Length: 446
Length: 112
Image 1 (cartoon, rainbow over the protein chains, first blue to last red):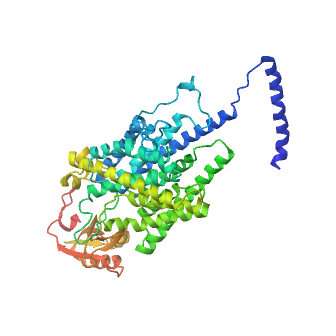
Image 2: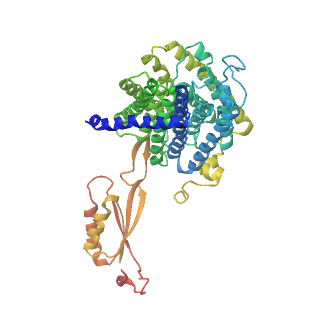
Image 3: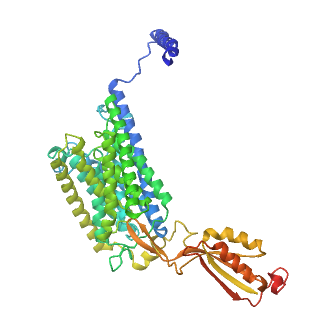
């Protein structure tokens, strides 16, 4: 029906160019239609810019999630750390991170250590360059990849909240975003040895991004110790309920939204029908993973504790997202939901498990990003025949050891040189008053 | 004059206010409080860890009444606030030595 109505219009539309051509013939106007190669470059670049600012928005998600899950006396500090860590990541990724991660042919040690040079963009208007039009602009690639680097740092701040001093945390962030993250990321995404020799597959970074943040957080939590009063003498765990579950829920949804860019953009190309269909699969699967993780956490906490626990449902959705991140393309919608569900199960059991070990993870970042990240990486061979369990496990172990050991050394040095923890009195008063002299909710906390 | 202090379940407040005004109580002070009695708190679970809620939210009422009204107030208050379940609260009655209406300076029962 629609088609019949449109036919006369189409006829007119077909005739119009003829008229235009007649004019053009007279004026000899050059055809300004981009070449097919140009169009691919334009779409790839555009895709990186859009998905890149979606991933940027995850910084807001982490901020809100953490602000909601810490006590009101530490909210301003948590927000301060989140703004600072993102900005530091941006600077460090420019100064060394980008070329350490993507050295091209300029490896310092082949396939292990990239190049120590700052990132450089294309000249304005691509002037006087023979640009490779098969990919995307360097500016868009840098912008997109920078967001992943910042995500890694965001993971650490949640675990160590409510007791770590501002400046040692920020110094660690400098090392993490400038060196630790880019070096291990080059092993896979920069074409290094995990990619070349182990056939490691990690689509958007269950290991490369999320587990890395998780390992760094775990090393920090072990060295920093739990919050005062968190664990009683007789093995009792004393919960410190979060200050604002509305913000925490908003944060979770912002992360969920940002994840479409995180996983979707990692397709890297949007220049063919096949590629954009793949990006669509990735969006749908990413969504399915989150839904699976949230629902299983809802059901499990009802069964285990008689009442559903919203904070676990939030963690469950995020664990679902982390789980599907290593391979969001090949699973069916059903498999993606199941992969996310396993992530949700992991969170519900890992949160109390960490408490048993007296590892104090304020927002549940270690179960969500480290444990679910490992699961997601292990699940790749289930739906993608190009991956092997050997390659996946070896890479998990190699990246894990590297990040855990180097992070541990950095934390220990910082502890020895300047101390990591605020004083007991400051911790009880709250970091907002003690370190910043500024409260997030001044009317309510007097 | 008597001074009545009562701690009741918060959701009963509106019902109690209505019942008391019906029998002639013309003033009531209300405070949101926490406390424990026989009910002595309960446990909740947050992120897999059980914790004790030692103080339960209640509403505290303070009412100054003429001697003639005391028994009726106590009876009405008790009957209205009662659910029969643990944690319904308590009513205390104290002697009240003096009362003054600030606007007029009236004293005693006239001030109530």
